[in-house]
Length: 364
Image 1 (cartoon, one colour):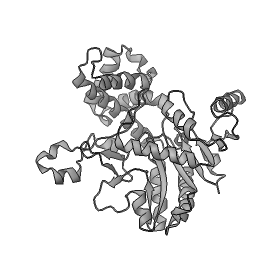
Image 2 (cartoon, one colour):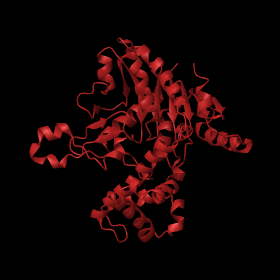
Image 3 (tube, rainbow, N blue to C red):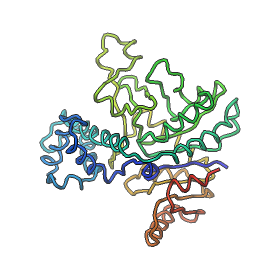
Image 4 (cartoon, one colour):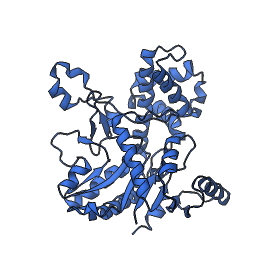
């Protein structure tokens, strides 16, 4: 039996992560409280775009949906066209400013939540223990578990990283793409296949929309990671460069600044990045191999059509589906059941409505 966990934003909410619908509300509140926590110039660009270009009143900014911000920007970038009064060369600056506000807000909310992430640590230990049976070459015959996440936060990443330390780091957090350590001397971060070849094991964590601890080189497209820092936000304040390209092209050393490569909330998701192509391909393989799919805190939104088509194409007809949500209202529970049954049809389905923490407590 192979189990694949698919995590949405609801997985991390009980640990203090913000939900997407409240991100802009939190951004405005936190900026008003302490503007120095943000890049003031970028926040100004973000605010002017919403008020002057999109036409929202200042007291209504918290009601704006992120998809309605990023979708027109991404369409203009794809079509090489202007957006209202913004020239093409400035659209990227606006997009980067919005990304800064979103990413920085996530970081601040998580840092200030004060909520326990013990259930995530427990889940990480469970994943690590199950995956440890793949060491010493056993991975060829034993592949019981993996996790696919739509989240940017690194709660689970850090917990898995800490968990495998008990195995003397004879394992890696395997993002199922070609990953490099941001710190050159750090041997604890490497591709999963390399660690398996060395006799260790991998704990698979496939992040479909990127991760707050990832940075990418614009030239060689290498993907870098580091634990436990959220470099995907920190790079705005302390940019780093690709050490490989700096070494290979010293005459162009200023052109290798690493950037955050998160896939933002948009109806036009660009999956052309070579790393994301590999990530999504591996996600499809994991889903196809799953005897059981467990969705924790994921609502299967209509806007996430890339994930919906992947599940539609790759889920086995006899796969068992488990849905974990946090909901106590009977009427709401019935709507959730109808929503999932409409998508998965006659497959066996089991529902848990006591939240991620309660469900993880049942795992053995």
